[in-house]
Image (cartoon, rainbow over all chains, first blue to last red; front, side):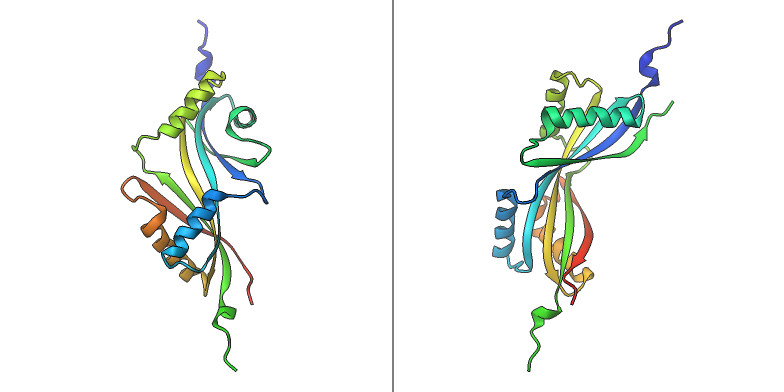
Length: 96
Length: 96
């Protein structure tokens, strides 16, 4: 009997942090800083905002999972002109 | 001569991750997952989105900085009904 290929896949949890590159203006962060100042939190000198994506993905191994997520970052998740992505494999689940 | 109190302050860099609680629907994550699927990334089974805030803050010590950031989370940065915050002191700069 043929073995189902999907049985060889492992589930990975991958964190992708998409952050604005240094020097790129961050209006969302500036707005939050202004709001904090108006609430009396005058000790805050800078706020920068990034996005954290937690992807659950099926892959044969961690290297393959990373490669796929890098391709996703290139094609959809980041704008490489102003953003950079930090990819981290957090854990793998569903090992068989 | 009086010593300027601000000279005793240290600059801390603090990361706050504001994430939706487990079980709360994440339409932004679902939209990203659908977009990935339509690009052919069929191995992705879930996407959750969180926000990372990087605060630069002046405080007397790390405990005081943490306390202030916890107060900011309560008053502005999170909606505790649907979100939770993970606070982490990343580094301190400007030690005198």
